[in-house]
Length: 69
Length: 69
DNA sequence: ATAAAATGTAAAATATAAATTACATTATGA
DNA sequence: TCATAATGTAATTTATATTTTACATTTTAT
Image (tube, rainbow over all chains, first blue to last red; front, side, top):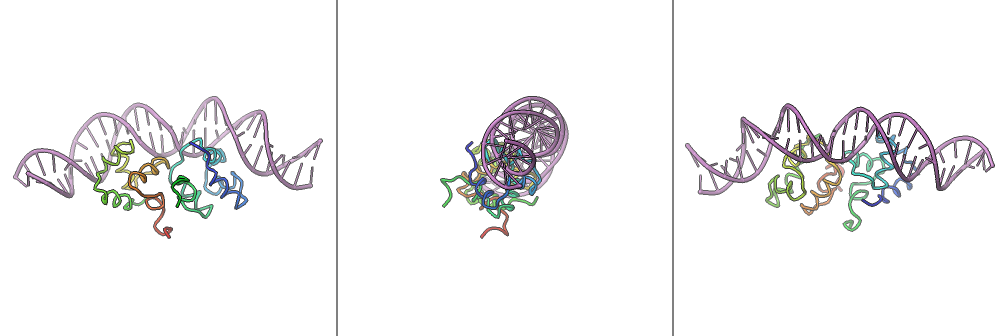
């Protein structure tokens, strides 16, 4: 699994830290860090919660690059 | 969690059974059934695999209705 | 009607997401 | 510099996704 740079950049665009996102969605900072670094496979509900905080959709953040548009 | 009728109807459109989808993505029929019935919270990788089999995107199948378009 | 396929569930076991704690490194600002 | 925030990562524990087995009900075709 590669890094999730779309998550990282969407977060940066809002000037939020990993901890900010973690607090907003109710998980730990390590979970957000692991997702950004592609270390595992989050649940869909967590993905949806992260997208809502970022003002993005699932396709924006979690759909494969080669499949966007 | 409500039922996932978008998954159910996309599957029906391809005339595939729950077991067909399960076999195609490498999980059990019960897992697909539970997802359709909203009984739990699958991982994003499983969601992506299901979408690919259906020829759909994450937004098509797993993003909330009120947030589509 | 009947058989077979598809579906809905449920209990117990297994795999893994996520929490917790902890420590090291890398930015960033005073 | 120096302090502090942010990040990367690892080990252990806990919660839960998923499997396996199993059985009942519902659809569908004959």
